[in-house]
Amino acid sequence: MADGILDDLFARRPEWATELGDHRFDDRLTDYGRGAHADLVRALARHRAALDRVDVAGLDPEAAVDRSMLSDLLAAQEFEATALREHEWNPLVHLPGHALHRLLARPFAPAPDRLRLLAGRLGALPDALATARRVLGPMPRVHVETAVGQAGGLAGLIGADVGAMLAGEPSLRSLVEPAQAAALRAVEEFADWLRDRLPGAAAGSGAGADTEADRGAGDDGRLDADPRGPRLGERLWAGRLGHALASDLTSAEIVSAARERLDWLSEEIAAVAAEFLGEPAGPGVVRRALDRVAADAPTDATVVADIRAALAEVNAFLAATELVGPTDAPLEVVVMPEFARGVSVAYCDPPGPLETAPLTTFYAIAPTLAGWPEERRRSFYREYNRASLRNLTVHEAIPGHHLQLAASTRFRGPTRVRAAAWSGTFTEGWAVYAEQLMAEAGFGGLPVRLQQLKVQLRMTINALLDHGVHCEGMSRAEAMSLMRDRGLQEEGEAFGKWRRALLTSGQLSTYFVGWKELTELRQSLSPAPSALRAFHDELLAHGSPPPRHLRALLRTSAFITA
Picture 1 (tube, rainbow, N blue to C red):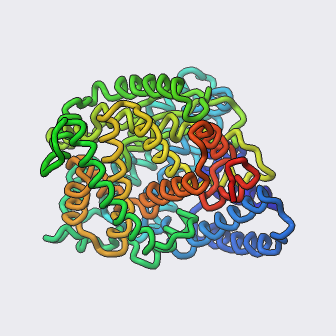
Picture 2 (spheres, one colour):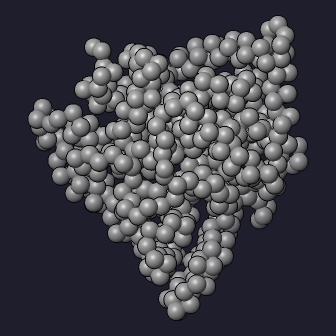
Picture 3 (cartoon, rainbow, N blue to C red):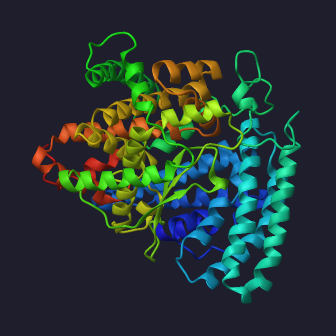
């Protein structure tokens, strides 16, 4: 039953199937038309009813977790389709940059086969963007501005990147070039249509320009002039959060725990800063310590080489300490494609967990955005200094996302549910847990320990920011004060996080909640120091389930004491 449900969902969401490594639908795009959307809602209700008839008592622990995760997945998709309805107000939903890039960048099949799939997906793009114009209503300005910027990157991908791949297969020009040309026109028309919906916006505005999200529409920095603001409100945000986290924690418990953790971290980073400077703790000690670390800053020209150097250091440290088992899965550091910029500074883009070909994981790093003033650019790289890049590499690569997701891909359960419904709370929680693990073991010395504590401050504030923006009407000024004064963030980082809080919902809370649940699991199981690597390897051996399922999955392990 589970695999049949997934097959139906994959056919309705081809981009999701591609991301997961199922290539049966790579020549298609999602139909967001009203008829197709109504049919999706009916299908989700049918699938939930069928799953509810399964006798849970007869399932073993692995199958029971899969059944619970599939139920959560269906509930989340039903919430997205019926309550959130993001395809009606978020233009970013309709831009298939990643769906095209994955066909170009990953050699899961010979180039001619992938070009044929690309021709199909490009051929579907004009109708898909025409549908987007029909279904999109009032949109948050920050989403429109980001979409305009990403549309420029998407046009570059369709023109230059598809053209470069096609140059190696000239016999397919007659198939691909007409679809390519039509897709380019459609993207340009869609971008123009979006620009027309920006009141008073210059035609050239994009993700890098000063925008209403930067300035705030009203004097207090709130987006009051936005006809459809980006804030979800308590009801929608709580629903989105619950489905994103799959946690037993309530939003009130998360906010309370985050505030308590923030106070503890403020004291801890002051003690480490005093040790780093060799002076007593006192006013200004943290800022002085962070300023010294921030002085070792990269630039747009050096940041990729700096990341590669940090990766070599991480691998050498792990080989010497054996905190967790290694991975031989290939990893490549790349410049983030332009179509993907404007939301986060870095990401780990692994092959899909259903992929059968041996493919490379991309660790993508974004240079600063075009249009940023020089002072904001310098501020950004003071935040992402070389000690910070070491910590970022732990998070995104090893032993964070890359290592964890490679282990997750090796898991083979009774169904494909664990692969399709992987938990962002687990993956982000593990990555932050890995940062703390490495810093406390001495990786990078006190500079990295300082940066990791600063990142923990940022992670904790993320949860408060997520709630504050969407539920409490937090203004830009209030958010910047929280991030800069309590979180000790540079202006460039805080500016980017403010935009991200407006562009997303629920995801910013996954870091804190995932870290909290994994840390509490380790504390409750108390593995001996000599067994720490075995504990971590066992933790990573069950795919990427929500942390609340881990105790049931580890029940037969030697680490369970009660």
